[in-house]
Length: 159
Image (cartoon, rainbow, N blue to C red):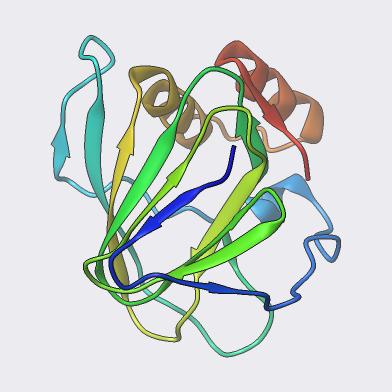
């Protein structure tokens, strides 16, 4: 199933490779959850505002490693900046006002495509929200531990 890109998002074939990643610790650069979260693990869905400060030009700084969720869809709505999403074999670039949906079972990763601030809403299931909480709660970034955390949430770390 292909990803849905709406509004101002554009498809692109940037050709950046995910094989340049060295360790799981380097893969997970996600900023801490913003203080604006609507919902919890006891609700049907959760919306959280995230912010990435950006960085110097160069290879992508992945906010999340290449992964998939076996039974959960995930979506982003861009408020500021440029979000790049690799979903399956496609890469999409979403600008303010655009949304990207990655269907369950689709390998994906995403990053701040610009050098400036990226702000977006992450629309997720409680299971994905729990995964993110567990990732941020652990200090053990070894591959086996990260795989176990993803597995606990019916997800798979692919990178």
